[in-house]
Amino acid sequence: MTDFSNTEAAVIPRDAATLILVDYSKKSPKILMGKRHSSHTFMPDKYVFPGGRVDPSDRKMNVASPLDQTVEDRLAARAKRVSPMKARAIALAAIRETFEETGLMVGETGLGAPPKLLDTPWESFSEREVWPSLDQLHFVARAITPKRHKKRFDTRFFLTDSSNIAHLEDGTVGPDSELTEIVWVKLSEAKDLDLPSITSMIIDEITLRLDQGLKSYLPVPFFHEFRGKYVREEL
Image 1: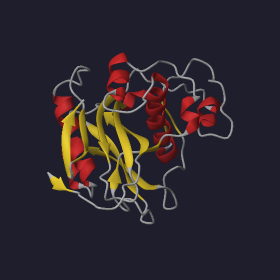
Image 2 (image 1 turned 60 degrees about the vertical axis):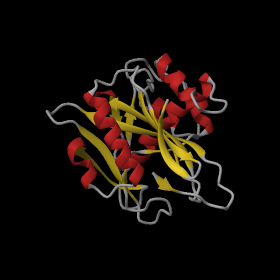
Image 3 (image 1 turned 45 degrees about the vertical axis):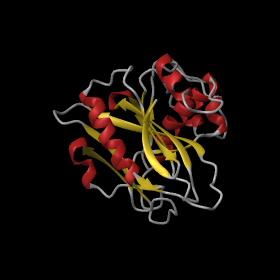
Image 4 (image 1 turned 135 degrees about the vertical axis):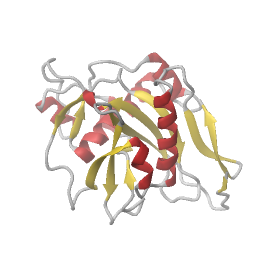
């Protein structure tokens, strides 16, 4: 365990969500990772899973399917005021942020266009007639940034099969974008990239979880600071 004790007042962490896309089409599964721009003050040049903060629009978007009840319950565990509506918004944030950073839309087609949320990233989902679907999202980890950091997030990590990608919007990734490149990397080789420490830990967790078959009853690891130490507990 690492000592993160600090006498300064800690910044309140913001709700955030991340999506781990897994490609099972080959013998060795691959995961999608993106390289953050060098100008970022938070984790520059690091390879991460796409994700970011929950936005108010995430509470308003319509979905093709709801969260699995087990996932919804786990999202509310050890958390303050996580209603079913907030749990849904957190999951939708993972899908929206993935689209904003990679151009990939996760969801279903063939259902017509979802109601349009003007002036939000969700407007593109309506234009492409993609409904975000939540029932295929596996909640695989939660991590709160240690108190010593000036930017802190309460991040929930979701995982889904890449076959749930319904559309790709070109031109999202590039030298002037939040992610300068994205790569599909074998899960067994992902830790060779330049990763934040928490991302490396999550890769270990999802490797174990995939080996166990992504069963919904499996405990969800929760990384957070407790009495000055960064600890792993389970939800």
